[in-house]
Length: 191
Image (cartoon, rainbow, N blue to C red; front, side, top):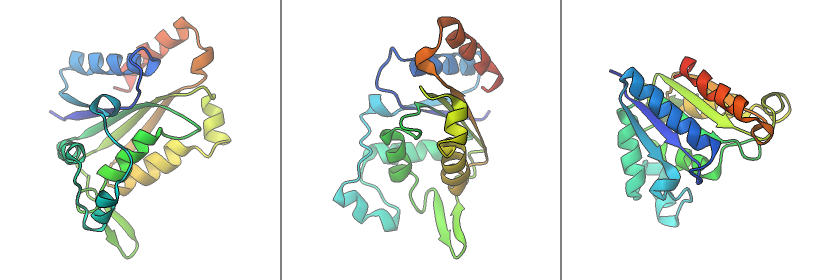
């Protein structure tokens, strides 16, 4: 059975993102699907490169034990679910740092004359579950559609991930309890 890895990035366990995480875990358990959780904040992941780490970049090596652990998990993953808030029409810094420090050469890609050749082809699909104060249409049509264009079609595709999908709950700050519950109930069709 395929292993799903969840990458979760929110510092507050009373957030709606945490409710999304809990419902995702519940749905996977109900389906009997094995999963692993990478909780970037709970793990204390440092998204900032040190000089020592950056000196190893070209060799695809890392010194951070969390990076090495995350890389091992990704090599065993068939499906990736990322749960995080959209901040300033983009991913939180801790998620960007995850991409920067974990998706290293030799593990995630090789360079070719025409660009990158992704090596994480064992990950067949990625699902981005996000929340935002901006409406989803605004993020798509006025802010550059970062989640689909940059994250799914560039970053994840560049490291070999198969298809990707983005599901956002926009205007979270103005939502009702009923709207939030409807979003949680609708996750079943994506998980």
